[in-house]
Image (cartoon, rainbow, N blue to C red; front, side):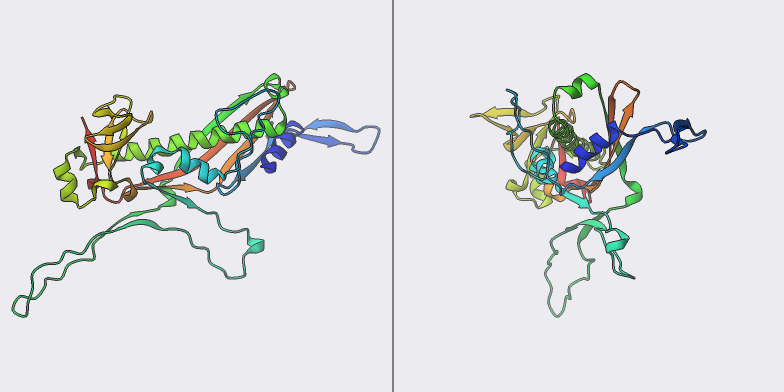
Length: 304
């Protein structure tokens, strides 16, 4: 990810917005403070989830908790790390419109407008004497309202000493890997919080699951920090016989058909790299917008 490396280099050399060069090219050339302008020295940009995650070189005797030199997109890394995605929840990246220079005149740009569950039709007995009663088309829908997107941010503060011990490529890889792993945790937290807040959430039972129409192999469980209902059998974690995984993003234990849930994530991680003072400190801030989508909460249960 050379773009982010370039941002780090540019931020180190950036001038505050309130500084200009007066008398440029003359003997009187000097820096001058402009009143009312920003004092921040830095640069901003954005990264798409489709871009490749920077490779960790594993040089100088260092090893990492992920394979060195592995090539994977940020979206794929996010899907591999997220517990709700592994349980079946859909990740919906919301792509940004193309820049105006590349858009044909009068062109429209479309993006996903909702996450929709298509439900089975309800067949009933009918004949010529007893015609079938008309029913509404069975589906549930959660709109992707950009105005309801939740904004979250993370900020790193790195001293010159911390930066000096590694190359810009390694620093870039460490920062972006941490951001993507943290985003996977955030995706889990936001969707599990949405499930926890569901009005129709009831204790899990196989009879209720059967009544909902789900297949048993659709069900997955996520065990929170309280460990409710967790059992280990022959090295496999389960809850009431349902395959389970651990999560630190909630205290509760949930069982559900996670492929009937989703989370929309804006496909532009907004980044700001600032240089602070003359000692070479760098502040890196990443902003993300996301929205959990739960069209029908009756496919999820809590375990007490």
